[in-house]
Image 1: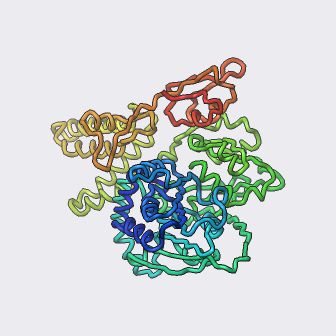
Image 2: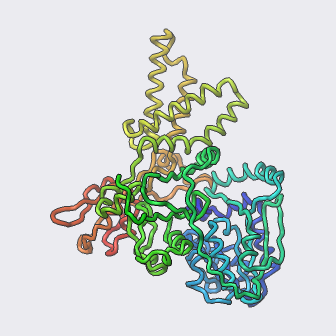
Image 3: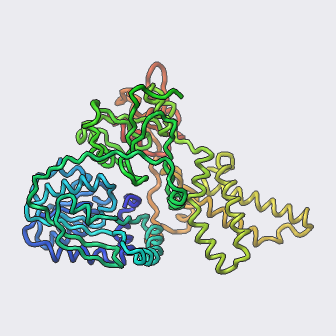
Length: 283
Length: 274
């Protein structure tokens, strides 16, 4: 919820509206099905701590991470309010920083609800590798996320239904969500076996459970391929992005530097500027 | 942007394996949100604040000192037009649909007026009197009302305020376009917010909650200052200046809008808002 970091108090309310009250139900379902007494649980993008509290009440040793200090502040209040202070550990780090904080094979359950869609492609790939490292051998990885329905008709109907909810949520809580496209494929390509996938709401929501593959000599050294940014987005895409209140990022072709965008998605990707060997073009 | 998004970009790009130095240029406007110490601890990279706009990066690479001239927030005319379009397009669509359904004959004239007055407001923003968007919109509405009154009286030979309904509509549209509930930045709250306070609206359910809007102005603890120029570098509005040989002092306190870039970046904790 990139837009919403400045309104963390309204986050819960906004998400309740946007998910039609389902977000909470799904979190409780995850805890009920997968969390047992004494398990070590990690929540990626724990936000306001809803799932952590439920898991701690079910007897798990819980840890949560999030990059937003606002969200973590709300989480701390909720945890204190639930009387669980000291039982839940919070870290303010990004998902790709996991390897600097946690040791391998330390969690029975790693879960991420409504957070994976906030990551760009390379972040997700790196995250999946780190998650695999942190999972205990029989540990489970669970993702709950909005996804893009593959069926065209379902996608259309879903956007119609979702549109007024999204507008309302944005007006009130300045938040929104972004669906993932091929998360099942990304997860299995990163060395996981998918145990189950439950779709709901016209296939637009997925609850995916996976475990890491045992024969894991495959420590692939994935160096992301830097993409050359396409200077001109297609006209319709530009208009669409524009009226969505984002300013198109136009890279000046005269820079004389070569600009390598790290991911295809035009708006969140970091850009590397590299100097040609001969130096800068003179202005 | 905050430190974690930079850390993430450094990690996913594996830039540490690709270049043999340890510097990274950060965008000027990220200064309020970046913890350079954390960045260094987690990635080994030293953050350097570069120019405000990426088009000035080549200049910066040639001569680091140019950053002091290219660190300001500038709202150029094309940028303001972009803001006009992107901030009001959805509003126009929604209001337009409502108009089409209820009084479709007004759709075209109202839309034309909406964009025309919006264009005048945003392009004329620097010259229209008034220190907030709302006041300027009010001034513009006033001018348009006068124009209509004069037109009615002298061209149509009718009473000047016979078109009062049009005048009301014009005022409403202008005030909407200029409305900035939160003020533009922390230290420039708008009259709209003040009005709501006066009317007793602390909050409107979940929709709006008034916050304490006195972040104050910038002050400098001179005994702590080491004249490192970081504040001079990261201030987007030219609050700081050089005095004497190389002393850095607050010169335009009135220009401070409490973005907290300097407070966050000062290594000596010599700056504070109050």
